[in-house]
Amino acid sequence: MAISTLETSAQKKELRHVVMFKFKDSSTPADIKSVEDAFRALPTKIKQIKGYEWGTNNSPEGLDQGFTHVFFLTFRSEEDRAIYLPHPDHKAFGALLGPHLDKVMVLDYWAKK
Image 1 (cartoon, rainbow, N blue to C red):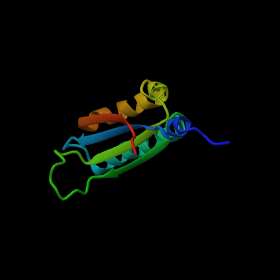
Image 2: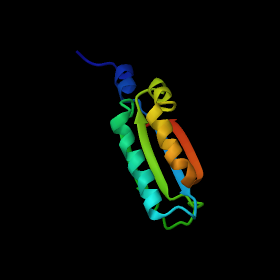
Image 3: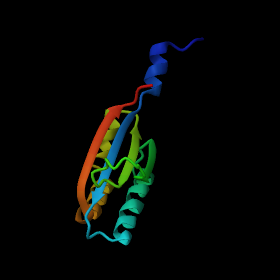
Image 4: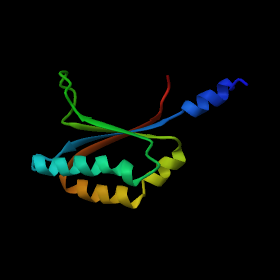
């Protein structure tokens, strides 16, 4: 039995949540590491996060505007993202991040191939 193209594309549909941080100049390496560790723990606490990766900027282009960290989360649906956003563990992470955050940029999109 063949799976329809519609079913196949629906199964592969993924919602990406991209978060970039620029930390305050006053934030120490230990402060930043605590933020990294706390963000890295979220997928173990919030089951709606289906994929997670992160890294620090190493672009030679000089267009980062001071943003150093990027976190890339994957959700299966907007409903899953809607559970994540107000989740108590996400809110606790925000409280830890707040004192160290200079700027944040968030972009969400449906992945296309």
